[in-house]
Image 1: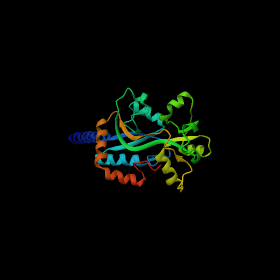
Image 2: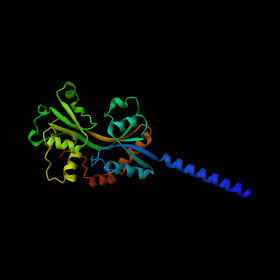
Image 3: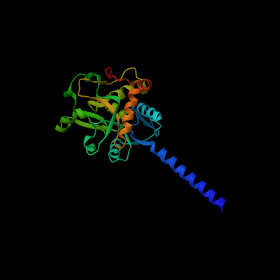
Image 4: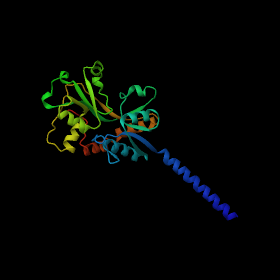
Length: 257
């Protein structure tokens, strides 16, 4: 009887210890909501069920430093944003204080600037420098909002046509089915130089047309203190981050697009 009681106590202690271990593990595991675009390199890619890219590499380096585990859940852009604001995701990447501001107006969000971006218009070379008068139909990736062109869209001066993938946007632009394609210039450069390995892209970024520049942020509603830790990590691990950027040929300055 005493032996059975001893074994029961040991089992109870074991289960309690396991429970504490699982709880501690859960407290260091976080869900990061990310986008399902297949080809967003150098920033990210989601192909064959695998999420990868420079953003993930930097976040994973930070997580390793602090003993965290980031679990990446992939969604269409609008669905990801809705889940994040509803509190169903711990972090969101990429994010920006200016994106879907109306959706976020009732929540307080902590942000850490992570990777530079320029969103601008690519055109066929013969239309480079022709100005806004040339733009009648602007192609955009599905879920994007071309903020510098909202007024033209509102007045009906400019029509926007969405495409599910960057590849489709390029094809439409080259075939002149659209007058310009609004997209991330670093992604466009990476696509032609690294994926298609083209010596020269058949389309060009027009810096004279309205464009938006800033940062892709990682954000959180729930864990502002971890966002602050991440900011510190970016500051103190610049060499490590620069090495990761070099692996993706990611340049902080976008002057050469």
